[in-house]
Length: 116
Image (cartoon, rainbow, N blue to C red; front, side, top):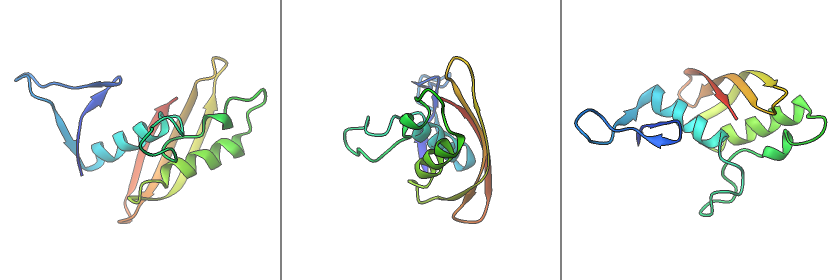
């Protein structure tokens, strides 16, 4: 797939003033980041899209529930088959840091990290 490049929630423009495009692994990683940073139900055209933030917004967050929510969000995209490794770090400011490896449908492994 080809997508518009997004950094810090803004579209990226090249030196020529045109929007930058990405594809391949960079596009797949960006797609994962966009899915995980979108609150489930926030996107009005598809209420099932996104990450279930309620898994981390409790008094005592449960890593198993967070893991299930991550797997649910990741596998919404048919290009991603399964979550191979997932490191979860919820800091004192309630920022969720995820470091993961995803098995893609074509058998490749995509490594990425996302902060929510």
